[in-house]
Image (cartoon, rainbow, N blue to C red; front, side, top):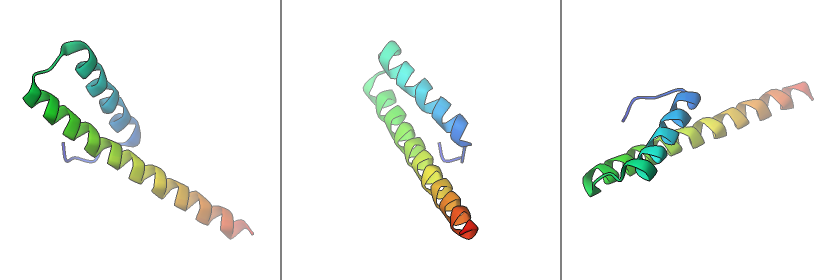
Length: 64
């Protein structure tokens, strides 16, 4: 999944993937695909959190 999702939608998809892995016992090929997708989404979420933190810090510095 290469499309950029909102943070909320990416987190929702990660939770769906975890639930699917835990409850549906996917075969090895599907498991590999799901883990790759989740890893990509986690990286996307991490980047969004880091960018947001930097933007907030910059805004707060401007107040001083």
